[in-house]
Image (cartoon, rainbow, N blue to C red; front, side):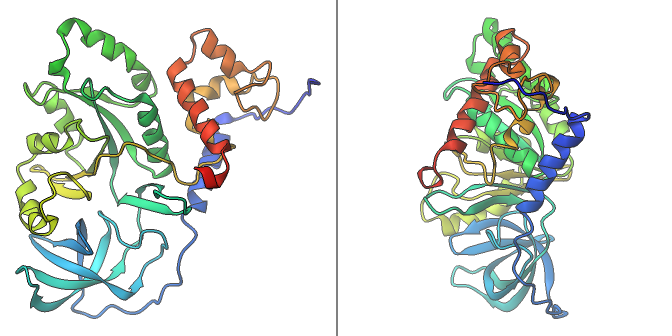
Length: 353
């Protein structure tokens, strides 16, 4: 292989920002043609709180309306027309449904300011928007039973960056770990603190760490996401007593299900809200390319300009400064494994993903 001298990028930060912004714009410009219908004066603005099978629960101030979706929905997006967190305009029909709840129709979805999405399950290449209009993503993992999953954490961090969400990391079940091993867990996860991501270690049994977490999320909407069994529902119950307001209606439509099957917005006592989400074992990031992937690993930026070849995939090339930094202990080896796993996944034929 012949060494080739190339012009270096003078400002890596600006280049990274442009790359990320381009990806975000690409995922948000595929819109349907708006009907631009003027809303009837009786239309009311609310927030989608949760899904109820084929229906949506919409909160209007202190009351709830169970809604269907209009056949001529006014929206700027084409993927997942309605999702939890959407600001929507509804028309009530003045009746109650067979389960005794006020009913209406969603006729308009306001533009989404943030979102968390993933590649929908199955072979079809389709975006699934999980939640809209949240301010931060709380990645919830357990210290044990089940053990925390760094590969999944790193995927969530990329999705948060793409969706303009502020990430935080919450580690539950610290009470199940002997005290002498607490520092080992903190050290193992310290890479995220060095990346500027707040990390909270909590016990839902002893309430250790809960006050700090509560203060961090008291403003805005916070989405709790992570695998099943880490205690997201228990965490919500510890932070707020308002869940019953949503649960009383949801239970009628759940048909005996005991696990969370749809995201749910739960108000916080001091303002803001928590958004619970179903447990997710796998998380395929929507519209992530090989070219942009390195720029979602911020710590690579200090080394990429030293690579012998540009562009460099940081996988096999000789003279790769990123690989060298990993070997010298300057970059976290497990974060690098997360990167390699994503590279391998993105190189697979689209039909195999």
